[in-house]
Length: 431
Image (cartoon, rainbow, N blue to C red; front, side):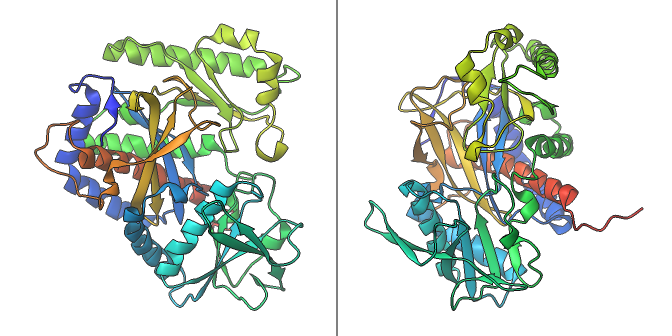
């Protein structure tokens, strides 16, 4: 199933799809050379928007949940990627400790964690779960609506190692984005591999840093393909001190929204696009679809309701928001059962392993879909991950369309590797 596209099948996305298919050997070689120089994030997911005239990532998550939305047919790819990733990091690994979020009542989240256990169990690891929550003082079993159960245990820290009772892992996998800070129990582990690293968490990480790296990647990739990088890159700006409740720092926001809307208008005019430009203002650090608003006109900022101001002032875990990224809005012209949809691509090591459509029947084409009420539909390549099919008419082949999504997602993953290298506090600095 390729979802229904509103745009005609002769638009730029099909030209881009054809260009990518025609250039596949050069693209794969380019990625191969990049991965010789850079280390991919251990795992990540990328939200992609297909406007029909533009295809771009709008968010890259380095602590992806939602693994439970991948179909069983996708698991062999994930298991192979997990084997490759672990082999590089700790070939003799026997035990894997997963540190999850504090999602006490969210059964969907725990189904995601169990899916990770299945993947790593098949990859040859004993998997157990250790909680950062002070409420977990003894092994605690959670029963899920699926009939499955999961046991969470208290973490035990010694001088140099982190583990559980009678469980000493070589590798610790964080499925917790550290939005509320870096706990001391995770710091100064010198004899174990902590994945992703602490500086990948939202305490340190900024979306603006990621998209600056992505801008660099998209320029280089655009040169390889002979395309305008704007076709795959959302423009952005950043403001560092905005307080929506006290109405301070709004001048920075207003001027940047105005400038970005003007830039988008010029691009739309250049490409003959008859759509209304918009930007998305969102927390520069943070996730879970919180602290996000769509702005279609700079005058909208003068008329923000108190409810919107309150929503924009706090992020996950009640953290105060003061830094925002203003990102070029990318429409989504994809539909699943007439509801607005966007593809989300999942990767492990340097491999695409699966994905799904995030679908929201109550949201518009220019709105954030990562919100309560969203549902998930497995992507077309669930049927054994078929390879691209040369010679198919652009826009008519689900494997070809998915291959294009996978290329864009891998560009975002490569940008994440640039970003993590640039922000690594332990990196050697050369004069």
